[in-house]
Image (spheres, rainbow, N blue to C red):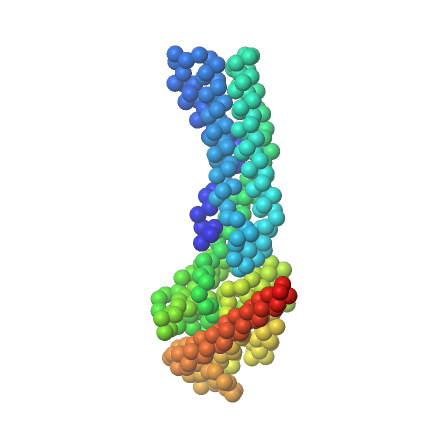
Length: 332
């Protein structure tokens, strides 16, 4: 995942402590060398350690303009793209400024008291690093949050939704070949379940997002709503499971209300499926009914989902092709 390899971002004090300790090596190894040479080496060592660490922090983060729409929206939702860019620009400025200060004081050391000038250089450099301490702390906090984002591949994806206890996780486990992976998700205390299966040599992804699509949308805060909106970039279809027997603890009217809300919120196909048809008190007429307990009807529903995703995908390609043709006609 794009944020998985982000390393811990140290604070200003941690960086300075590391740099100053490293600079003691030239001093200890300086026997036989002049005082000017030793003090210059110490300043250069401090500058090298700090500039490398600061600039490396900047380069560790991806180019946000090249993120997929899904990860771009989630990054914007969690920490804010502009705030990230501003903090990274400040840290980059500090890394370059430290090098510039070191060059200036390298020259001054030869024309004054070497130890005094080196201490002046240390003070100037420390001031610059402390100036971006707030940015460093923000970036480290952002790193901790962004590393929790789930890794979702670009294959056709089914988003499984529905109230708690309607059988979402059971569906993912039955449909996918392997035990679903559990990935941390920054919008809920629960993880999301991600599984994969193959049909006709094509790979598909099934995602269950507990805490996001399992209760009325009007009870959500702005961050949750933005996270749900981001799903439109990765999901090709929402499969909403319904428990007509109401064993899940929620009335059927509330479950159908959630169905209508999702249909209005996500601009991707929604397939409503009634689960627990093996129970004696299962009721109602449903076009698609399954039992995740026995497996009844599951394969048929998966096949129907694949067909819908194929049709939706072709329609999107036709829309894009039509838009490109229109643009070409305008240009001509």
